[in-house]
Length: 85
Image (cartoon, rainbow, N blue to C red; front, side):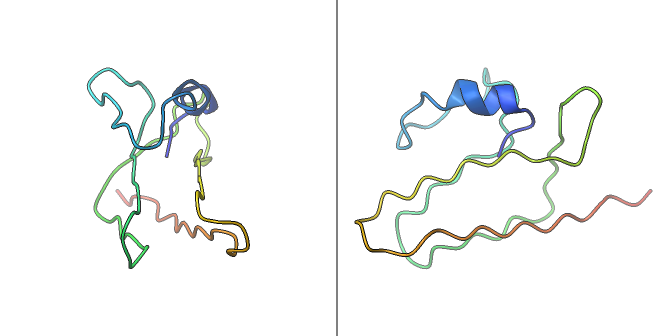
């Protein structure tokens, strides 16, 4: 997940099995690779932000499905819960 489309585009050249350098990668919110079942991940109590100017509710997500042909499409579900002050 990325904070901007530019960050997503720049990171697109990185091989999926290579860890991103978090300390120098701008705009990267999280990087998850599923290599063993169950292929689900609950991400809670974390904060990520859209860095567009002006800021929006858009989140940029890249999904790569490297399975053999004939396997169904990947499904990604995101739930947005705004912070209450």
